[in-house]
Amino acid sequence: MNCKNKILVFGGVGQLGQCLNRISKERNLSSILFLDEEEGNILDLDILADLFHKESPEFVINCAAYTAVDKAEDEVLLCEKINSEGAGNLARCCDQFGATLIHISTDFVFEGDVPRPLKEDDMASPVNVYGRTKLEGEQEITQLLKTYYILRTSWLYSEYANNFVKTMIRLGTERDQLNIISDQVGTPTYAIDLAAVILDIIQLNNKAYGIYHYSNEGVTSWYDFAKGVFDICGTEIKLLPISGADYPTKANRPAFSVMDKTKIKTTFGIEIPYWRDSLVKCIQAINKDR
View (tube, rainbow, N blue to C red):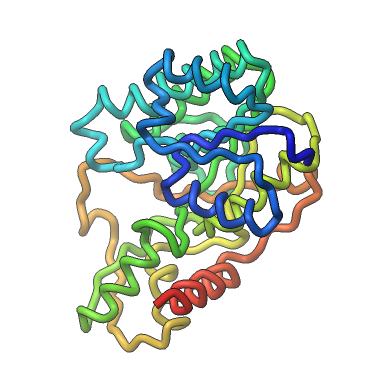
């Protein structure tokens, strides 16, 4: 990638934004601007227009999202504004200023009632407000813009920000026993791996625009995911598998949201790591930072 080609990252200080920052430094990509919520306010078209005019980005990466799944059931309007309206605002600016948008979406656009890996063109039917608003954001982009990549991902974690892995590590030092849901199945995704793929897509300059699925390889439950964390950490703790019905939450979750990654692998020629191998790397990074 030519270093003169500017990239704007919205949600640049969140989990995925921090991972992108790290990978971009490893690749010596200096023309990336990481924006926080204030300077990169996706709900303010005036701020966006000024940014696009000033920076003339070739690529825009949208990591900004409302992701508090249960809280979204109570804050519906705010969730809609950020996930749907915000995505539409970025799409309009990308269209006006000739930029390509890379937008991060979610497996939660699916109902999760089909026991097979889901393809990009399978019917989306969200079961909660978060999933619905993320699907609406996708629809805004596809209607307003031609030059976009939408990457649906799942169960994102890393050594940065708050996430399931870091929560399990903390609870492993505080508790002797944990109840973990065993009947919700999907694939954990190391955000460092996702960040690398996002930058691969930019650097490959393959203009195969569209919707893609990306998670790590393999299939697991939240129970087995937690078991993997504790096994790798060498933590002695009793884990009890429970059903989602035994742990009611405000928002419904998909029971099975494993995604088929054939399209992204064949289109961009990428290899995807197995989820547990990436989990080992993440825990090593967490331990190194302690």
